[in-house]
Amino acid sequence: MNRPAILTQPSTLAPNTQNKALFRIYVAYRSLLSVVLLIMLVSPNTRQLVGVLNPTMYTAVALAYLATNGLLMGALFGRLNRNQNLLFAVFLIDILAITLLSDSSRGMGSGLPILLVITVAASAVLIANRTLATLIAALSVIATLADTARLIMLDELSINSLFPAGLLGLLIFGVSLMVQAIAVRLGRAEELARHRAGDLYNLQRLNEQIVQHMQTGILLVGDDGIVRVMNKAASGLLAPERPVAMDQGRQLADYNQELAYQFEHWKDTGLHRAKPFTVLEGSPQVIANFRELQPSTNRESLVFVEDYTPVTQYAQSLKLTSLGRLTASIAHEIRNPLGAASHAAQLLRESDDLSEADKRMADIIVNQSARMNRIIESVMQISRREPPNPEYILLADWLEEFARGYLRSLNRPAELTIDCEYKELLVEFDQENLQRVMSNLLDNALRHSKMATGVERANVKVGLDFTSQHCLLSVIDAGDGVAPADLAKLFEPFFTTVSEGSGMGLYLCKELCEINNATLSYLPTMSGESSFCIAMQQRAR
Image (cartoon, rainbow, N blue to C red; front, side):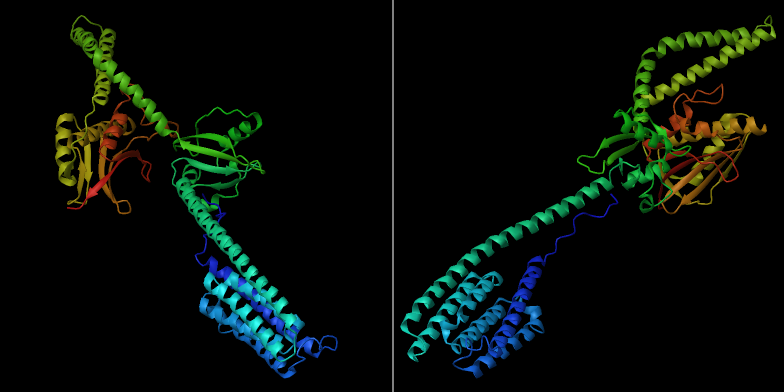
């Protein structure tokens, strides 16, 4: 659906990004520590605590330590947080610097060796290799003990200083092992969270694809009646003339007043009786259903809209199938008395003693008997419809031959023109089905042309739709056209606008076109003439 994604795609570099942030924090700590150590040397209140044995070395190491921070923040920073060996080297430098600063400040007595705890803890977090992290802790302990032993040998410290140095060593090892365990667990939790985020992202994308390609239209509508989101199917059913992106943030009533009324009625009463409605004149009927979105603090609702045509087609199919079976079972019983009545009316019409009024009555009996017979034949054809036998047809030659045969069978004057510029055009269609469709369409065209102009006239025109690669075979008449109110029922069975029609012709034509992978539609010409167009796949010769 056309809504900004709640989740963003998880980055595969997420661990490196987090390590970079942690390393940046550690570098900031080193910089601050360097500055503090230099301030302690020059401050009257703290100068007696640091650098008392060797102020020169203390100052030089503190300045060098501060300078390394610039290198870390500069050229080496991009690689350090991903290179375990370089990180190991950084922590070795820290151990050496803190040890030298402690040595020049009387070792354990200055309290500076305690800074090694922070260095060891940082190494346990930043260095993924637990062996290297443990080695950092071991080197820190060795450096502390070695410096303490050296100062004892120089009589700067007493032998009792080994006890706090040993406790500090135990503390360093304990902190290292504990932080490593926590870091491992946090890393696993982070990896799990990253995989879950990836799964959620993929699931969301899958849901979006499913919803977007559903045949059912879905709209997310707020309590104020504003459409927040809609999928492509909803846009195609409710606003086919506008891009989907333009249809967000509009009132539901802007799409269809009946839909908005049904939505408000459902909100007010909690009851909904699905009732089909049309969005545009002549468009297929649409049916809507409503569901409250739970949980929703904004009282949003889901509106499902569906094309009602398949439902009506299925109902018609069931009706015609049942009717066909019934007709097939009683055709013999109906045709015998029907034929007898028709034959008797024809004999009666030939009687010399019959008045003109009675002859007209006899004509009505004959005509209505023929009409009833056509209805039975049409229903039986639909009920026993067989799979088509498609063939490649050279359309221009086929139309010429069909027109000659049709005019011969018509046995009365009629104007029929064929307009086909594509002499090499091939189409795939069952020839018998195409002949029945064209005969029916031409019968209608000639009848309506005569009703409007007094002359039976029809034009068959062949065109190409290069976008869809379809051949467009149109039968055009000079009639008055189809009334807008009748467009929706034009291809329904038993619908007719003339008294002698059975109402099954166009329905049968549409059915025959569909089983041949073609479509039949009513498309008036620019000049207002009626045109029934068959769109079928063209084939390259």
